[in-house]
Image: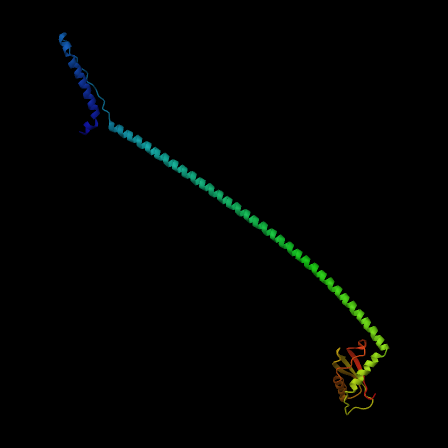
Length: 264
């Protein structure tokens, strides 16, 4: 049964050919009855070719499978090509991005370095200008101080010259001696004579006074008396503070020597 199903087409064609040959023989029988009997012609057997449709189908399927496999291969190759192209594009994009980022970083670093250089240069110029300004200001201050010092020295010298001139005029008029006599009498009135005092005693007192006449210090220099006499003279000068005012400021002296001779 399996063989019949496989070769069904060939059997059908073979049977059809035999039927056609038999029909032709039957149709031609009356004509042959009127004629003299002839030799019977035996038809050659019809040879049929059995076609293997399963093999054809298998070959067809094989070709279809091969074509499908080729299409799949081509699709995979195309996919791989696209993936490779995409990967190459991504790599090129990555390289371009890295190059661009590197260039931007280099430009930024260069800009920063340039800005830093400019800032340092500007700072150096400001510092240099500040030093020049300070040196100029210091120079002006020194010049002004020197001018003030000269002016003050000149003023002091002029005042000193004027004072000396006035003092000389006062001394010439006897005012200096008058002033010293006023101080001496003022001190003698406050002297308390010690028991050891004797005739001919003379002590020299070195006196420093303020502008107000207040006695600031007293030291006894040369003196022919004893310690009690020396102390009495010192105490008399201190008790005489403040000393009399001078008749004119030209004869005033902060320091002077007073010769104390009580017997005079």
